[in-house]
Image 1 (spheres, rainbow, N blue to C red):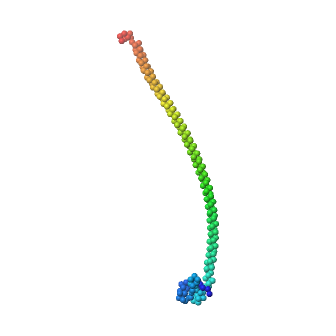
Image 2 (cartoon, helix red, strand yellow):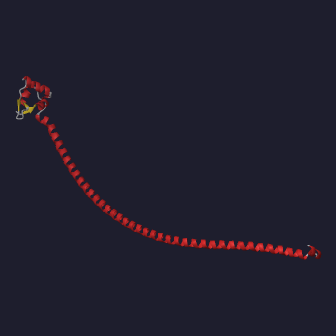
Image 3 (cartoon, helix red, strand yellow):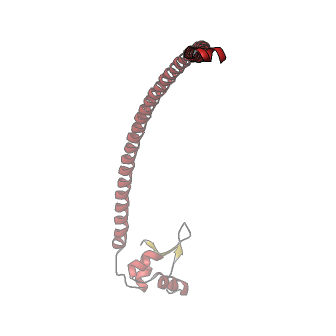
Length: 201
């Protein structure tokens, strides 16, 4: 007859493990040790003490079902691993494509930045030349304005001198006219005197 473990003995008899262990310790139920030093009980000995409520095939059926479920689960896990591996490969390919695209965009941006810097340098050079030209023209204009200012001041001075001379001439003319008027009045008065007045004043 075959031998079973304490767990299997409990399943065959419908008893608990504690009951089976207590029976073996008390000597009510004979037991032995297997190669792994685990307690085992002969099925005939077990049947002598306790009536069997299940067969060995029945108690092993759940184990077979468990193994079937485990096998099915293993297949599902393998399928999931394959799916994830394929997904990872696709993701890596996508990342490589994105990296290549980002590299291309970065190079384009670097080229645009280089062009902008070159254009900026040209613009600054043109600005410097224009500023230098404006400065030279401004200096020339300043010199011309200075010359014009001197000429204007000279003309203003000449005009002022002429006006002063004209004012003096008017004063002299007015003074001469007043003297002439006095002479005319004196001459007129002298002419209007009678002979007596002329002789005796």
